[in-house]
Image 1 (cartoon, rainbow, N blue to C red):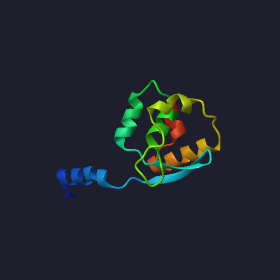
Image 2: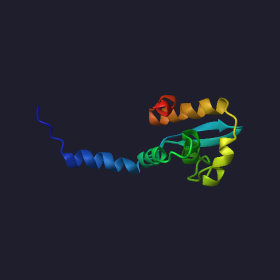
Image 3: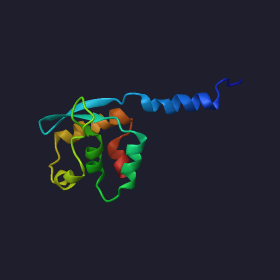
Length: 112
């Protein structure tokens, strides 16, 4: 069976996906609503290259936004403070949101 779809058609459709609005989920983070946005491939790639920062801190820095904006909640200056936060229900909600947005099981990915 002959495929009528060209390489350029496939590439254009995939590469134009960067213009698609990213999905997001609102989660409770210590009583505050934050928006967890679907990561880009670039963000995931940057995360894997930064071996000095624990994965969870990188996820918090990269994917947590003030709801309805493009403003990130945390920045590099918050790393040491984030490391001091206690875990709790928020972690499960955060992991679930990331799993839904990426299709990746976060706990399994961290082990690998």
